[in-house]
Image 1 (cartoon, one colour):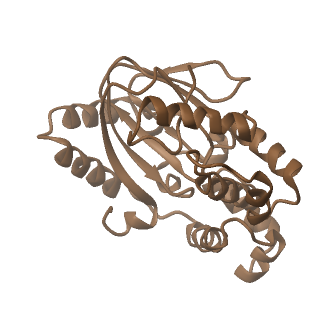
Image 2 (cartoon, one colour):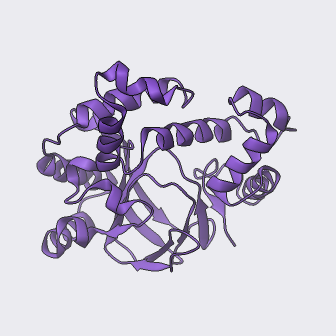
Length: 273
């Protein structure tokens, strides 16, 4: 757990090294953002079907996505990173989060070439993963800045989170004492999406994590418990987020379980090969 005040922005910091379970992994959109400092060979990301695959050597920042991403990994990968809360990257970005929606940027574009090169050098020569994560946490503490509207967005996001996305969006602004227009503008600046989109993503993520691919699935019951109008609406939402039908999604999840039982990544990324 990161130390305060980073704990209000970050879910965790991580170290990743080794051979990925698949050369290409699909990451469905979730209510989180990501910073990666790459220390190995370049990796590739395809952010959407209408966007070309891009290569990232120094790492990248991904604000909260609205669609699935495809990651292409080298035979061995090595990086440190941050899993942010949806609003978490905002104090560290030189641009509004909305400009990065579904368009990852390199670390150089965020912090500058010289600063990132110096950070990567220090990380690469650090004495083990714990020291590396401490270095990254120190860098974040050093770069943390006051961000207008962050308290409003954090509070409202907390309401959305607590309800698993099942909230009346029109009531959020009134409860926070601001207009819906002002709230939506702040969310776009700091999260990259509107409160409505964030709520949809929380609801979708909660639904997916309720699926046990090792057991038979009652899709109608699952859709109802998640608050979808009917199974057709549920299926449409599922395809919009993942590009897969619910049944195809479970087939792919079962493949991961079968080919890599007990793997730490099982549960969210999907094999794209």
